[in-house]
Image (cartoon, rainbow, N blue to C red; front, side, top):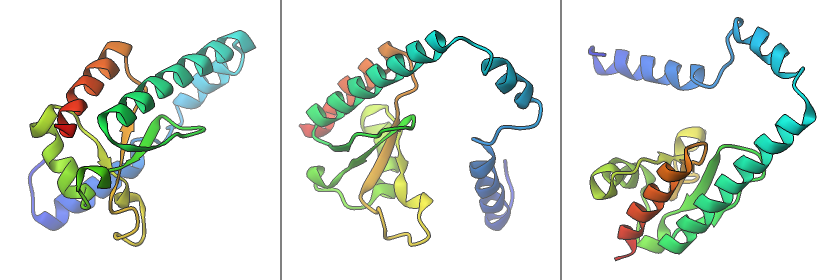
Length: 142
């Protein structure tokens, strides 16, 4: 979108909070999902846990301090082992540095300085995408 800085900032802020909200029509899908057998959810949970562990281990091997989550699609890491302190700057440069994106955690804090050196990565991806991201992130340790 184009517009004044204030308008773009307002739209970006609203979009951030709408991305993960289930709209009314999705409630029918949720109702259907609740009818699935427990084995579906057991398999789903095991698969996500495996992906979490794959990415967490890869991030740790690449030099990140990793906070292993218990119930989300995201892994929070600390970037200070790379001599970095500003997650915004780190995340802005990351695509050019190694072709991977991350989100600065401080966008979720009322106090922008809280979590300033923390970034998060999503692991709800295909295995080959996770493996490639891990390989690319290892470039940071060099």
